[in-house]
Length: 105
Image (cartoon, one colour):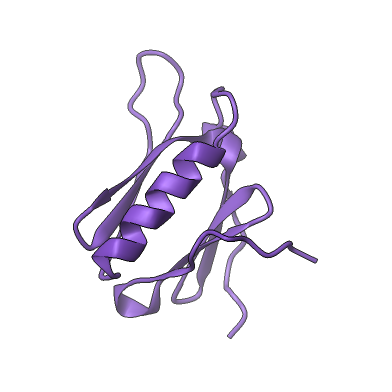
């Protein structure tokens, strides 16, 4: 069973949900659920009512980026600050992201 987190759950536009479960960021939207291990995250930042997640990548390659918009500005800022403070040492985690297919309703 996933542990609960003091990091807020973000609800973005289009029903997208971004939350922390154990040591992963979990992005759920529509029928897709994406699990991003903390070790794969380079940085998270808030930009107004949006949060951007940048993944680690091998030197010389372009990192993958996820951007989620439509949430409260204060919640986005708290989320980014707390996640960044929780990130472990960085390594190439781009291959660690798992798309789990359709999410449960």
